[in-house]
Length: 505
Image 1 (cartoon, rainbow, N blue to C red):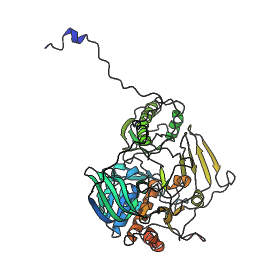
Image 2 (image 1 turned 45 degrees about the vertical axis):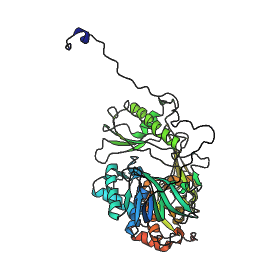
Image 3 (image 1 turned 90 degrees about the horizontal axis):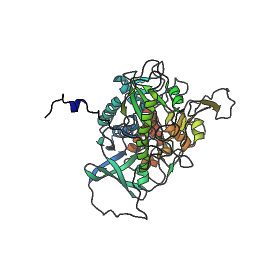
């Protein structure tokens, strides 16, 4: 064997490093084409084991599901919580979305959100794993350490006595008349059934409701959904770095390298809880997809990562971002909209913006209607104070009023909006409740209700209602007045109903 001083080695040309070529043009569909014609297979009938027989089965362990399970279990119900990942938290943890809305109303001093949502915030405060964006340290939005949130949600679920099934998916459900009698799940152990008196669909995409064949709403009236965003965390931001809104304006000037299209994003982010030079960046958007469709979701996940790579390359040419490096990427893309149930009451834009306080209100908030444009850059906000803010892809902003008041007119005095219990009850089902972004709203009102701090409230309310209904298995038979008193006893500051509010039938 020759030594390293051999001239043939010393004079050899260096080998070229392997290059991975980025795709050009639109990314392809990732699923193979289906066979032509109506090709199906018949699945043989088989006996499957019953894994649990409980009062309440909660499907989905995101912010809504965690609160639903904990609330029901604390009221003495036997509860099973099914979650597809190995941890709880959903969008708050798996998707890296680390900003939660304020617990206060439009006056920035009246608490409008409490209960388990606030309990989670306070637990994170105790662990020094959250900070508030307002100078007063309390009334603004909250920025969360997403890894610490996993631990807090573990504690909440386990201490409540809930039995958890991780790495487990809802596959199907058994419907008898207007009652779901079992959820069929798949896991590493195979297929099994969960029987329950009450079920809570916290899947985000109304999976349980759809599995039993009920119709749902999808996206806007044309079926276009708000685009999903892949969130990622970076380090190396320098003090005085170009603000993210200016970064977006720069990004919009140059077509993206992988498809030649304009940057479609509304870019935002938040500094890290433990290191202010780390930033979570919501810096991607994939348009014209429905995340509840496998091919769309696959394309969205992969395309968002190509988009992220382009964003980072461009950012490194901007002041303060020259040394930025990737720390981590969300386990899943952050989903804003897909399917919503047809509920006993479909919450409308007008009810929400007017601050209607329902007789059966079980949650409230002042988060604005927030619509990421489904097939073009930009975003539109409608706030309770009467203003509409339209932000274009180059970050230019146009202000107007949605209430017909001239621009510059006095702001509306609405404190918050509310959601009725009836919006958690899917039409056609007696023993199922829904919590999370797929409750009974329309496209516009969903733009306000869909965020995580609200999902926690819906989950808390659904858990209480399911525990109250566990004997009868009748979601509509719950005493709404008693339920509201229970929720306020849990620290939820529900407003008194407005005069003339519709009374639930």
